Image (cartoon, rainbow, N blue to C red; front, side, top):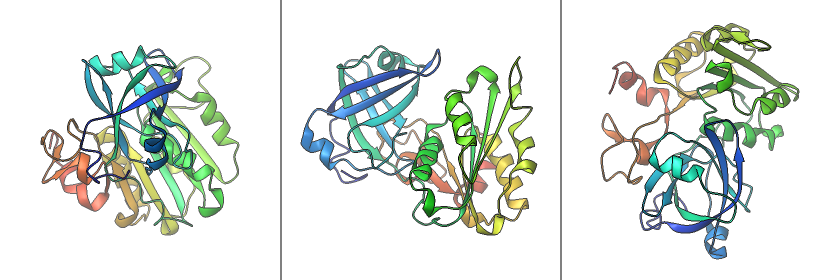
Length: 282
């Protein structure tokens, strides 16, 4: 099963909740497995792609895949309970069933950037598309250079997986920089905008690639900073968010200029979207 093979556009396949983890008051992780063992065995995805998760009688929602492609047993999704479908998904427990179709979209070009330093810029509540890259690189550490993780949140309580950030900071050849717009007691990292951390990031722009996701204003500012440091446009990638409903470029809800995020993204190079990001609401 790969994106765009026709099977994805059809009805969802039944999937079982293997486990559920409450990450924060509003964010949870579901680990799923297709009920049909043959479907599970055929399923393949790349970091940065997404699935459509379906609840009977409620609806369907696009959710990024945050597990490692090498994990053939379960498919992980970290979800924020914010709407009707996601609040319904939040009620599921181990053993419950739901629908899943995918994977969809174009993921991160990890094969093309092998051997380079990797700079990850994350804005918001976890940003699973980039967290999947962290998992991928750490399990294949010899294939990449230095890993720099730059995370920004509005409030300190918005940082989920805090223990993972602490652990990542102890790993060899890895730098972790975290900022919160609003600090709190015992907050060990920077207080201020995430872009204030870029001067501390240690990497070689000539041999680096950058990947980012989060609010578009933050990504524009981060991209400008990285480009000023000498990172080539061709090695700067962004994961875009739009209202994706059909996931196969038919309904038009996720149109971005002349492209459709569900089909042509969600990962784009800077050259593909820099002109669109210059116009608010495009």
